[in-house]
Amino acid sequence: MTRLATPPQRGGLLVVQPLRHRRCAACRRGPLPLLVVEDGVPRCLECADLGHLVFLPRGDTALTRRAREESTLSAVVVRFNRRKSRYERRGILVEEAALARAEARCLADAEARRRRRARDAKRRAAEDVRFTDAFAAEILRLFPGCPAERARAIAAHASVRGSGRVGRTAAGRALTERAVVSAVVAGVRHVDTPYDQLLMSGVPRYEARRRIARTVEAVLREWEAGAEIRLTG
Image (tube, rainbow, N blue to C red; front, top):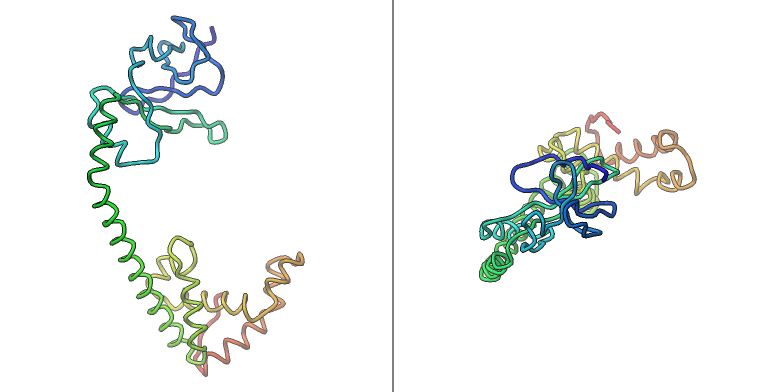
């Protein structure tokens, strides 16, 4: 029988979802949906004394944590990802009664957790509004000739939570001049010039930027109303 590499131990029992069909080295049962590697050979859960456990897929953090707390015996289930060349967690095995108790605990405080999530979402939304307002105000300070609705649109686009745009960087959150100007340059580039059409027609990015540079500079000069700001885009 082909010997198997033992997955790296991370503490506690480890069970594998095999990529290939495997049979138990002890009872010859197979193919095995889950197995334990002992001394380099696969063993089914029954032969490994884990057959009474039930599988809980990953995804619900609270349920997983509570199921492990309630279960006297548990194991982590992993599967090898060939593309990333590493084992990844797929879920856990726990006692069935422990899972039932964990589900009951989660149901008992589901409403409280829903209200907490709603409060957190409301708080984040309020923070986002305040930050967008501050970003727009800074745009208008640096570019007093910029229409207020454009300043707001640029600020809203640049500061979308989780977008990775300039408004969510450390410099953007600090409202540095460089970050604010970069957001304005990007807004002008995409709205006031044929930059997007040039890209769609196959023009390389740097060449497209060169072609529309004068238009961008003209719009910024108009918006600056005499302010001396060095372009960064």
